[in-house]
Image (cartoon, rainbow, N blue to C red; front, side, top):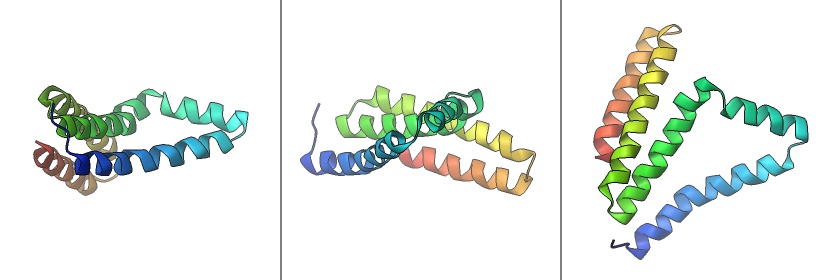
Length: 113
């Protein structure tokens, strides 16, 4: 496992900054807002869209950083599942936006590989 220092610093900035911002915002919420946020992020729809998208991006980035292809491929699979779910969800609202989203997800997946 060969980790370049420049890649490590950019990884920490890319994932550390939003993580700290989310944690600070979460701890500023009152208990009712925290409970509502937890319910939103643990719902089935959120799990297959936003959660898989974030986890897939994180695992792919971690796999690229550590040169572990298994992590990268698991991340790409999660990204694909999130992209398909988002596309199906958006299909009812706008077919054109759904197709554009599917195209962008496909481009992003091929860019990660």
